[in-house]
Length: 561
Image (cartoon, rainbow, N blue to C red; front, side, top):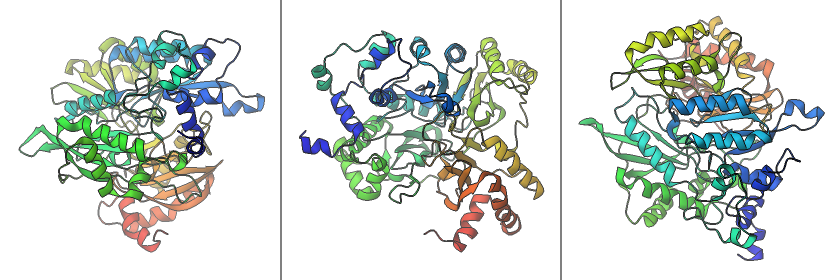
């Protein structure tokens, strides 16, 4: 690559070119007791290892106190009992004694200091869990429907999600050497620069890449928000037989305030593929992004912009050329809703699973609800499988019928009901972490959502709408980690104590919402919504949800710019 060509690349691209092993000086810094942080360059490499360097922004007045977020790679959100107990223990020993369920069916450990980073990472690997490629310019955690009772295809689709996840992993030795062997990768500069990943090449991807599976009619993974989506198609004469997958490409959530060249986007349908060609399609889509994505401007370096600017027909031709065969036409399917099942439900194999609401995805103990302790006791005694949902809740799966009552009683002992776990609007809510740890946060999110929902529930009660479900999502910035742009009602952080209010997504999570008000103060949010909710109550069709009424009525009155 010439000097002129390198001049056009972003800083992150140059970092990857200079050290495609992704090792940087992480190993050396990890062994250095005289520093509590990593360099700015290593901060970028750490992301490929599933680690974010952060600081507690609540404490900045007394100087930065560096802490780390660690994110696991858990395809489909499936966590065996022994693994969950290890996760819980590691959060006690090295984190802030909480586990955070992500919006991509994984776990995060928060509040880890540098001296605990190595032991936590090694502890995860000892129970066969990796954090490799949980972040960075690579394929992230692959999502899949976790609920055992929604379709006979669930277990097959989960296995396919694991196959795709494994096939798209980077092959650098740096991860194993640093986190398992506890030593820097022993290569000189020339040897590092000579490494080429078999799939990703020397520069990896221009930005993150996200994959999700879905099984109609349930869109619990928000499949249209992903770079690559696989929609399972069942044989109409035998619902337990998988015909193949419709392939979706070019979805994405992130944007930047005030930058019209950035925007959320719903994925396009590319075609249909038989199950035996699943990995061929996944690699072809990923490498097309690798070769045609923007490497100069990271705000424009997402697959969704390649699709928006080059078109679906061009993209399909490129993918088919790389695969060596043509995709079939997509098979017509429909989605009806997204969301989780709560309470006890029978699995297809006769056993049971329990859906548990987890407020903002944070597993912890409070004075009222000791969820973390209850789960530890349940998993230790009854050994259910833990399944994480894309809406930041969890399932206790594979429970024999004779153990249901004991689990219900144990939860009750710790203040956790099995029935009527939360109001409908609360169960359909989601938040990103945001302050005090996320460096991108502009406003509160996780800490703000419970209070906002309190006031929203009061408004619904005032209007006799208390039983209405509304998909509500909040993020502390416009990057969209909680997928706010698909919600019926969303709050997107604009500045401290201010949010953009968006309305009009649908329960099937197939339609983007639109901005209704900008820069609304936290204390004014409900007053801004009261006239909308009042009109919705008075003008809606029978059973019409908020998002659908907004799209039918409000959008026609205020067309998008």
